[in-house]
Length: 430
Image 1 (cartoon, rainbow, N blue to C red):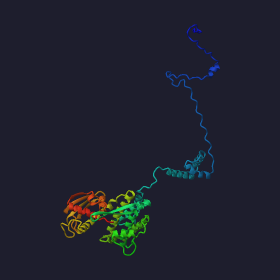
Image 2: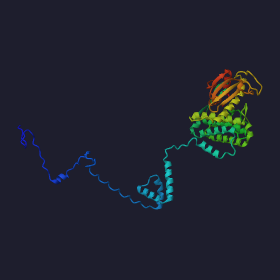
Image 3: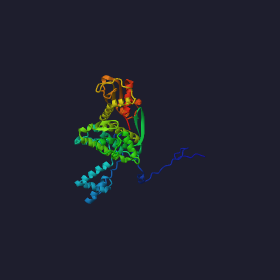
Image 4: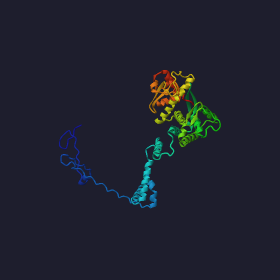
């Protein structure tokens, strides 16, 4: 092919299409590009197209005029933010001129705030104790509970709080009661309801001593705690249920109320336990100890947290056990379960002793007479020392810990230490 010739006479190039300019109006209709902005001109905004002004805000809609009765009925919906825009405007306009409605609106808005609280609705577990403490601090009881009855009052209240918090089925949860007989640990299986029946039957010894009703009924009834419990369990036509809680709690209230009104002399009233007797003040302390121990048994059976008693109450319980140890040791010696006495002394004299050191909650120091229940323990005649945590010592006394497994620091006469630890476990019973 031969090459064409351009319009300017040059060969080998394609002809250039030439655009014929249109009329002025056509050029104006085409889209115009804004001129480039030059930052060297001194005015960075030079050449920028003008910003169109914003349209004016639409006028507020007129507030509807509603009767006062209708506006009052809308206050609840307004507090919940459930009104339409027109109703909200009408209510808020009304609140600026009506003081009673404004006060009511504020109360409703505060109430709505409580409904939307993120906090738990469960009561603080310490609320009851704080309220009682505040009440007693402002207005002391006219007839206060004697100090020696306070542990029983506290432990029955704590156990009752646990019982109120468990379900119907948990009253039939199995509980294994443990105690010591001789040199071996024994146990008995029952239920939560059976444990409460046991406590009520043995508390009946204190009721009888005070002239109150015996839960086992009238007539000749067993005196020993174990026989009373067996009699109560065997008399039941069917296994006990949660219905046993109310009579047990009524009985504990009656005991505390009676000793509070009885005066000081009642503290030394004798309460028989079969083979021995205790003054009433020691008997109620012993019942407080049993209530705590069996409360722990129940709590373990239903997987419920249960704390030890207050330190002052625990100290009293430990002191009672320490005072009972010399007589228990002498009884075991007569039964051939303890080593013979080495240095007998006259009643009231100081004799060979073991230093019982209790650490932690309820702690203190006790000196246990080893050779005669009528002798006095003395630091000057100490032949051995045992150190135990307060709660651990109480578990030993309750028969829940074998003496050979007690976490005890021991020093001195090994025979005396063994005799005292086994005597402590022998204080337990059903």
